[in-house]
Image (tube, rainbow, N blue to C red; front, side, top):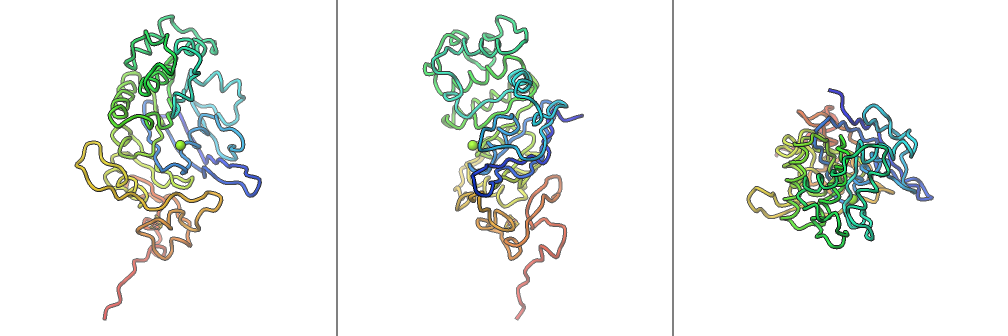
Length: 328
Ligand code: SF4
Ligand code: MG
């Protein structure tokens, strides 16, 4: 089937006055109807910027400088703000990291739902706000509540309820559970997945916690330093990560279901994108780096059913010649 969202060569640059900083570098992504796509990486890897770019919510100094975002046949990058405003909430909605920042503190939840409805020339049944509150497991009595009167978990649920008002085909979520404790986080994930099964919307879910999303996503996209470093079916990436960065991310978080193991993580932090490392951008932190890594920029290579941006998987044997021990 045709994907509902096709991101091609999407590039975002920050204009810093000096040379522009490439925060998202030629990203490709396809999302099909009803699919759950996880986007993972440490903070500063470009995943939130990618999400904002897809939703056309970037603000200066960040701007899309290349590529396209075709949603249901229309290129959002070329669209007027007015046409985009008509699509947002109705056809796709965005759930931010902190509902506390996204919600208006001086308006009740119900008033904010009504504002969202009024902003669209679309018929919505009078009891729809109550209905979406029930869908996310909140008593509709809380439509009268103000954001600060709700717990963190309830606020995030209220944001998701608002995102569901028009039954969109795609919901874009930026770490919607990251402010919650582990138990609340897990229960919100289960609920999002259940709603998705029930209502059939597609999800793009950004998180720094690979183990959190791996139980819920169909596809997994791993980002490092503004680039996609691994992309494939979640099961495949999770069971046999092809990129050393994906392996590191998997080791950085305790498994929700698995036994408790010591966490190793990845020493160091993502590079300053104004001065990305030469060759493979991960080479200064990579436990598997070899002589070619600082010299050659890897592409995304097919590795079984997944794609990985690592020279260990480059088809040319000349690139990834194994180092032989000298025999005495
Ligand atoms: Fe590590 Fe080299 Fe692969 Fe980069 S190309 S991930 S440095 S092994
Ligand atoms: Mg972020």
